Image (cartoon, rainbow, N blue to C red; front, side, top):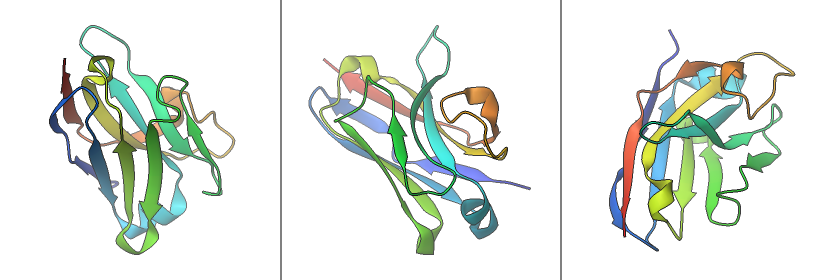
Length: 125
């Protein structure tokens, strides 16, 4: 059973920062590349950031590039999303996910088979 657990969401003012965490089992963390998605009310779930299959490359959506940083701690089997210069448009439920099919597109949510429960991020204006 693959289990992903997000934490770190909350309420922050415009321009503030938050760091999200996603804890996974050691097997999941080492076997599958992981990424972050988000879903705002009334909108589709969208790609935010992800690791390549090798883990050596990171990818970001244009809307967060330069403001968000994805990282991971192998020893802790934990992935992070450092979010700076937050805007009200960043308000959403943030999900971490694991991609199990080699060669699948990192930005495509259907490429990810395992999802966390989500953590709410609210940015006030």
